[in-house]
Amino acid sequence: MEIKIGDITDLLETIAPLSFQEHYDNAGLFCGSKDEVCKGVFVCLDVSEQVIDKAIERGCNLIISHHPLVFRGLKSLLPQNNVAKTVLKALANNISLYSSHTNLDAAKDGANTLLAKTIGLENFEPFNALQSDPRYFGIGGMGFLPEPLETETFLLKVKDALSNPYIRYVEGRKEQIKSVALCSGSGSEFISLAIEKGADCYLTGDLKYHDFLDAEGRIVLADIGHFESEALIKQHIVSIISKNFCNFVPLFCDDLPNRVKSL
Image (cartoon, rainbow, N blue to C red; front, side):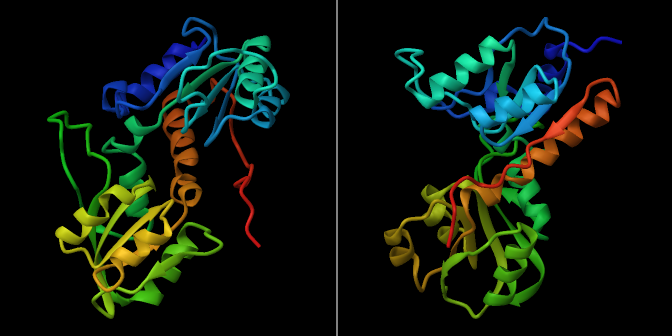
């Protein structure tokens, strides 16, 4: 039985429709054809030349990433640009590029709900449910731990659950944590909302120095890493595809670590 690239991308869009994506995003099929027979799928967080090479090595002609390779319009496809070089290599090797980004972040079976489940939150509810579609959850939300935990105990638990090398944080107004708000990826814009909703702790990535200064004493604010908070999504996508297409399509998951190193 032949599986087309469109069969796989259509499946993902039944869970995370492109209409769920934020206005600035560029999710969906970036290059390639839905009518091509899929020879194999390579799943990753970010597309790079190294990822293209791995897909070629494994005979995959579809790469599914969480982050789109191109967010802003390219003015040229000259090989001096890393993004352009990657696009050209994909095109030269007849590889389709597809991303499921903020639409998957916002899906009910998506990045935020997966992160909440992984760290053990219960009764996880969205910050703002902006759509009536039952598949929609929203960006960010808040839930509760089964039992209150000391701040350090909880953050060590999160660190272990996400295989995170380190977590930066500031203390909040309480010694124990019960209510936890979060946003996978980069979510500093929701700090004040997490405080307003009475969360004891807020978890997200890409926090700045002044974010910590402004929040200190009001909420436990923890930077759990952009990469670390979203790395879970790769295996989630693999699971969705494998459950629906069984053994028809060879399926591989990127094992590349975060390219930003820490000492």
